[in-house]
Picture 1 (cartoon, rainbow, N blue to C red):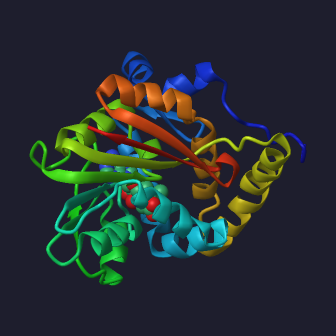
Picture 2 (cartoon, rainbow, N blue to C red):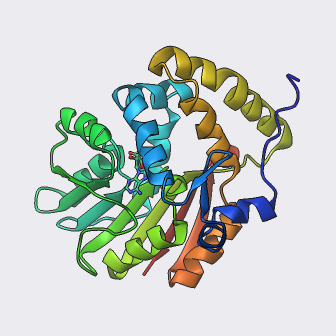
Length: 264
Ligand SMILES: C[S@@+](CC[C@H](N)C(=O)[O-])C[C@H]1O[C@@H](n2cnc3c(N)ncnc32)[C@H](O)[C@@H]1O
């Protein structure tokens, strides 16, 4: 039992996360559980309601602080210049928007765009200079076409019901020539490392999550959703089909996290 922890989806199963499958079956998965297509958004929102007050603390404990380095590497790929406008979709408590605001300077603009009010409230409590917060759905971003020089999305696209729609919206609000980065969890390359990571994800993480946030369930759905998500090469094809150019993939920490960077 303790050794049976390889839960990575096959390619066929991973493709069930894509819109084609969602629209045919009218179901969308969060973790390994399928919900009615129209319910996933509420389910995800409940998840973040439960963990919002401890979200930053949990990230730091569970990743040993390395998530800050990953976010820095992702924002670097945006090549932000002073006075630019940057949007952080699914921006949560604002870590990536904060890094962008610093680069864009006082005359720039850095916006966190997130559907969950409690996550936004936690972000606002950090009083990050130069960052503003807008509540809304990544599937219909409430900004006009070509409003931003750069758009980031960190650990967010997994939660969006219609993945391609989320990326199409990012593409729409980006200026021509603008940069995009998507930071997301993925499958470690090395099989022994992957075994340790699987053990940690399914045996240790839910225990710590349960103790600190009171929700073991939230920290079971979290590693599950990572294992069901398209791999980097698969995501690259989705981005290419939408129209992104110069797509680059950067694997971090043996592939636990991956940055897809691209240009419109
Ligand atoms: C794992 S958190 C990532 C937060 C932040 N980007 C970070 O890296 O720390 C995912 C965020 O996506 C948001 N989210 C989920 N579905 C969304 C949607 N459809 N539209 C906008 N935000 C969404 C959640 O509310 C949550 O704040």
